[in-house]
Length: 353
Image 1 (tube, rainbow, N blue to C red):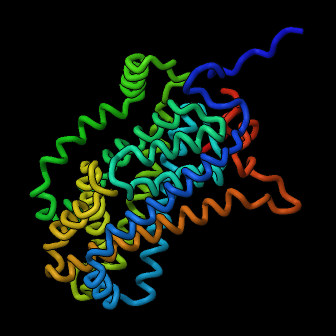
Image 2: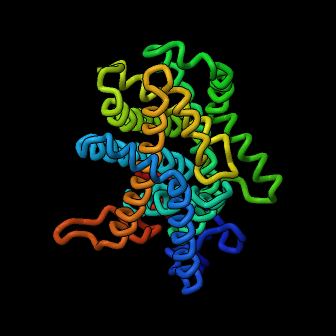
Image 3: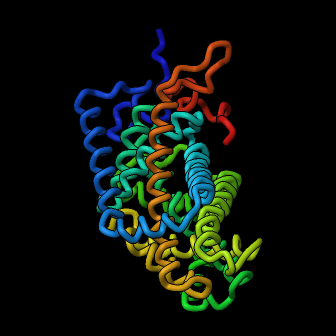
């Protein structure tokens, strides 16, 4: 009998994923618990030192604005997940929504642990259990950051110039990165860079190069994410300064303020999730429309709301991935990531994003 042809990723390779979903060992489950506890502890530490100011800021907000702000954060985090999922699918590992959400949201809790590699390590290990090669998970992770950075700089430049031109002036140097990142978004450039890096690491090249359609899909989700983040900040700013900027101008300014402060924060790799850097930048950008006390309150309330959103998304994604499919309907893929339903599909069976 002829042997079954091997998968494109040879099982013997150190980076290859298993042919089917790998069942986590007891040690892996223990490490996952330690990871989650560490992320929760550092996430709490990131805001605990300023809790009095945070509590004072929340006291100035209505319950409605808090709920709207949190819902907008969840939508924005969903945009980030779909950006990553689009890139992963374009690289050859489409995932159904539930397992994709679990890998992304649980892995993203690692950003609260000092150091920049915890999220990608977590996503690589959880992705491997779903049949995704580590190199592909790493590529999707590291591609997501420049996509969000480039789209964030573009969004902040356009919205701040439209709503409050003077607010963007001190950060004009950052916008010089936009043309560089625009060139970097060309799939041929990205594929060449990834191929060079894999060769230097002695790894097999990616089976599927990125396509222009995949990049545009990822950029589209990223832009929707920035819009949701702007709505999140606008709900807070409007309560803190109801007599200030309002209407479409307020939303545009909030989108730009959040995107610009996030871009500054992502450039800092040694503190948990850019802790402190993003808040300082947000206070500076909000200064033209808020007094210093209100700007600080807005930045801190935004920070805590995002932490709550991260925790809520991770918890919901983890529970949804374990929940069996409802009776009378076909599941959209094995909740635990059966490769036959998603990650293991061939080139002609790729699931749409």
